[in-house]
Structure formats: structure tokens, C-alpha cells
Image 1: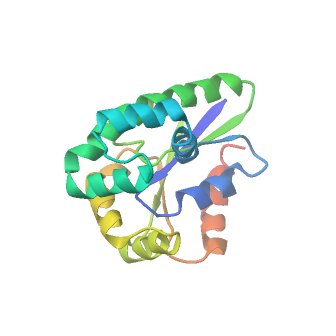
Image 2: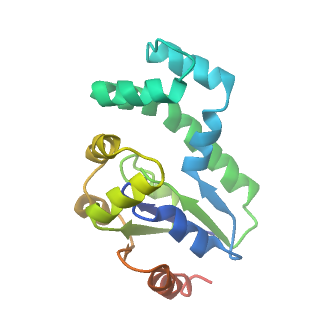
Image 3: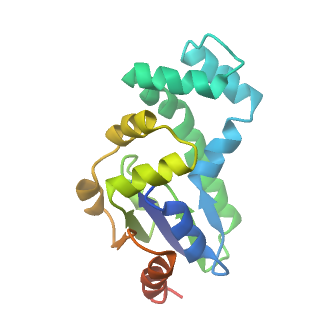
Length: 188
């Protein structure tokens, strides 16, 4: 089994790259999907509500975003709750799919969380900041939140040092596919 991780900065095209790479090659684990599912669970919400001292349960996500923007420590507190759960789900995914030849993982904060040891290959998706902001906003995100979240991540030049491949994603999906196929051919 070869475990291939796809990482990169906020809105760089990780999800698109992950889907392209895993398509009919092997199962895909998405840390973002795991987090999205956590937000649907009552116990998780209760825990976050308590640990972050939130005021209203009505607009749970909006309240968290507001608190992240106002207080930098909030994001770290939230990550301490979420990351162990995401890691646990990742390990379950690996066990469940241990008979597969290729496993794919989309993990945005892979380098920040020192997860390199779990993977045989790490691909970094790189994109210009102006494009990343544009993509983030086109998916309903707010520019000020992008800036807060982006500042919390390591800079690309530091992350790249821990990756096996760097794929620049500043142009078309067709070009992105070509670059990704050149990499994946080696492992198929």
C-alpha cells in the first residue's frame, strides 16, 4: 500500500487535485470532510460551545468564526479539539483500506501537524495568493477570514521542504491534470 498525501495552503486547489488523483485509483480520505461531519454532531458542538465559551447555539459556526477573528487563541483551542478526532478517523481509514494499492489523503495542515511520517508521498499544491483569495471568496468565504486563517498556516516555502512534489496550480484544470498524471504514473 502506498499512502499519498495532498496538502497545500488555503484554497490552493487541494480538493480538486485530490479528486483528480484518486479517481478510479484508490479511496480518498478528506480531513475537511471529517471536520464538516464533526460539526453535525451534537456532542462535538456541546464540547466546542463549552471550551470556547460561546454565547449562542443558534449561529454556531458564525459565532466560532467571529471569535476566531477577534481572538487568535480561539483557532488553536478549536484545533486542539478537532485534530485528534481527525487523526483518529484517518487511522481508521487506513485500517479499513489496508488491502488497497493506493490510498489518497487530502490534509490541509499536514506539515503544521507533523503528519509526514504517515505517508509515502506528499504532494504540495501551490497557487498564487490572489488566486487563492478569489477561490475562497467564490465558495462563500469572507476575505477577512481568509487573511486570519492564512496567517495561521506556515508559509509555502517552509511547507515545500517537507514535500516530495510541488504542483503549481495557477492555470487550467487541464494543466493541473497533466502535472498530476505525470506524478501518479510513477506509483501506479
